Image (cartoon, rainbow, N blue to C red):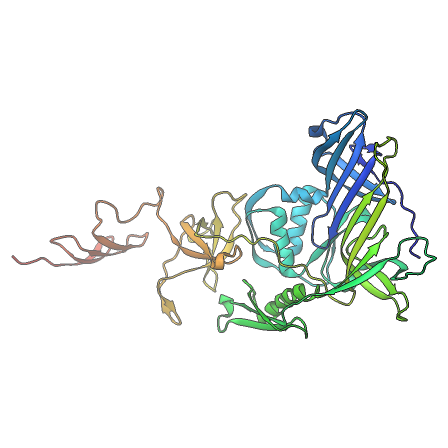
Length: 489
């Protein structure tokens, strides 16, 4: 069942075939961009600038991996041929090129995927069991589209793979039951019979230390009675606890769901397997059946979560100076199919230090910024953002508590300073408002001794420390109550 014929691999660049591929390496894994490097020979020198970003395909064993050339290097040359190395990148890499800042409000993770991929014309498939509700804010802050999306996929427990049976389409998935079998065949491992005509498939296993449990916490101002806490077991074999703060969980139910995702990201790779040999047309995201020779057990089903391929072959039409022995080595990294895979939360989460300039936002029929029943204002961020998208944020007050406190309403267009709790981009909070050239301070060099509270209608409380006439004044246009003091001589 394991006998395969290996076809010679070749590469296409701008629809031109380069048949003399002499080596290739592939690194593929769930929730990682593929890494494919090729070396090939040509008789004439190539203008490497012309093939950079060129559409390309790597073809081997009737499997076609498409993308574009993301790296080109001339390795060496001789009198007979030139040796080039190229890196083949999937079109998803386009989302990893530009850094930007922008805000999406009242959107789902499905909306986010659609927006980012449809803009680039990249085909994708959503295979999701869970229903993902709207988030108040997705905040991309000085990061690439891909990092921005990846960190939210990891948070929600959505992972992805590239389906090379469908021309490399990216598949987003969130449940182990949605993986499809690669083949009905059974891979037989550890069969060391002397009459085998080919290399035996070797199945090895590994085990790693992971925490016993994770303890996650979150705080939601709209459910402020208590700090949300959940404890989720990772394994019976661990000896440690792992504490983690999850920002922005809206409820206990949501915290437990996010905590389970976090725990599974540790536990899924605690016990892994490696299948090595001449295995073709396999790739991460697919299920395979493996039986270990002589153990008497039924075939075990595994999920391929990663793979490495190393190939070496003779040039097809050119005579090489050195003798070449063809090599094809494939290692599949597996977990049992009944284990739920989750990707590690390894994407960089921007930490926003300090504050960002913002503006108070409101409707055209009111001069006051929109304020909801929970005390959240609508604001838009300024500077280096694609377009002003309003989102909700609460405002810090110098005096606040149950049934007491103070608050001064904000008008549309007022300059605000917005900070982020723990520096997390999706946890905005209004720190205060600021004066600028359009909104001049009520205290300036002419009355620097005054302490003033003034409304736009002209109502004013003034506390003055002016020498000789210190005192206070409460006034409104047409009305005034003034008390001053003077030092007796």
